[in-house]
Length: 315
Image (cartoon, rainbow, N blue to C red; front, side, top):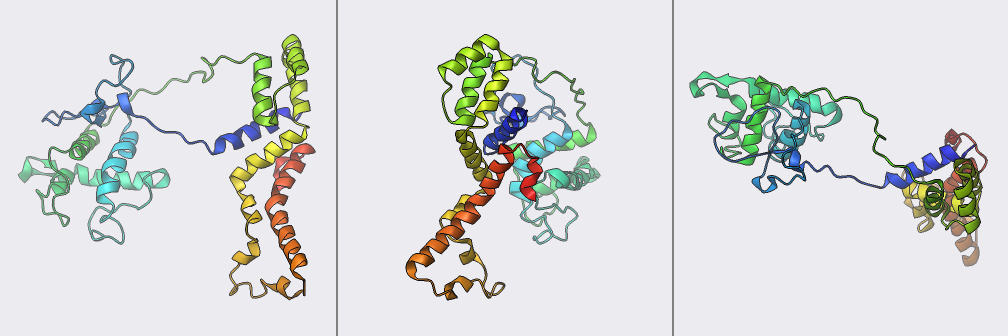
């Protein structure tokens, strides 16, 4: 039965263009701007965000050192303030703190965090054993960029917590595994089929389909889905969905051979020497644009229609 894999694949395509946002909001502790020392595991934020949780008394989530570096130190201090100079081509390229221009995530998270940790753990006895990192950003120790952060700034307090975390890492409890679908309430078969018919088939379900699925339940739902996935409307929706990913319809507007570099493709305009009249030349370009623009989508529809392995789109 091809219903399962095609619907799963199509759902992934429909969701590919969706974006999400990370709202830290109530998971952040308040930065009072005073002299209180930040403690590992708390997250600093503006006082305007205080008590914006739906459950103010709810225990705040623990943020690991890596999460704190990525969300706070890198995103709010290092990237907007330090990276301009502390990189291989910057004014601070000969300093002891080198950062990678990548976004600080993935493979670059570790090296960037290690570089800043090295600065944070160096202490100076002549300055009350304060961190080298904090002394530099305030220009208490000579800093090529001068004073970067004020001692009462939010960004400075983020670095203060980062230094505290290097001395006393946050001990976040290991999350327990839970069923991700524990609180999910499934739709009744007839309601589910209605949603699928609209999203995947591009049509409303018929009254007969609703009646059959309502009376016979999931077995009838599978039968109705198989029928839906063999309709022309589904294959049109499938091609539209995949074009949103591959964007080959762009070639319907301009012939792709016009985008070739004549230095690398000296014969790119071979078709101009065929002796075609204006009408035939126009038809030629139409065929080229349609073939290159739509053929990949037709191949995907062919694979789905004949229940072939999806890897066949690469052959």
